[in-house]
Amino acid sequence: MAIVYLSLGSNLGDRVGYLQQATSLLSAMSEINIVATSSFYESEPWQMNSENWFVNAIIQISTTFAPEDLLRECQRIEKQLGRTRKTLSGYTDRTIDIDILFYENKIINTDSLIVPHRFFHRRAFLMVPMLEIAEDFVHPMFNKTVETLYDELENPEIVVLYGTRGGNSETGEETDNIVW
View 1: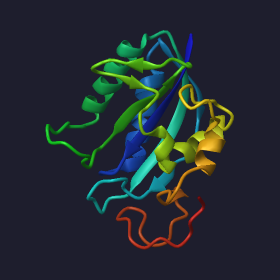
View 2: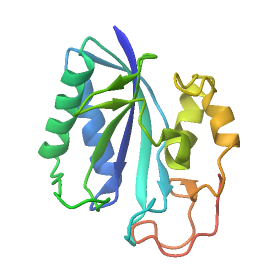
View 3: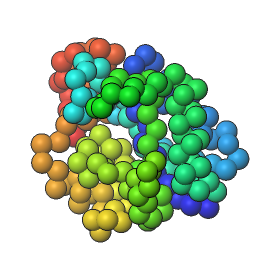
């Protein structure tokens, strides 16, 4: 079975509920076994014009799915949970986003799938939960650990443990308790 890291994110509706449902739907498949799950984190939107903060988590799975098959299953779950993909360029709010960050140590570059995730090394909201479950994982393109990549981040976005942010957790108002 292949070891894979998936990111889960939501910034619309019941954000935690969508992450929990996605995890449940993934674990219900006989081809997938959940190995580890990070805590939930909140993060400010990254390079998008939205007031809605994200809830993010990373899960480590073992799977018999080939990379393209896993991608199709992740997209099926996204659609089942109300994700609509816009044809416009740029990022938009979403009920759920499931990305394949790493598939073993493979480097995959097809029309439909790029692994490792092409922006992993620039996004604190992906690295912070990954630090919790796999800080020593080595990025196959940069040959650096997640911890090293995080330490090298310039101007990381705000990422806090879910429920510790000051203000209203659901609307994204005022941040007081930054943990990363």
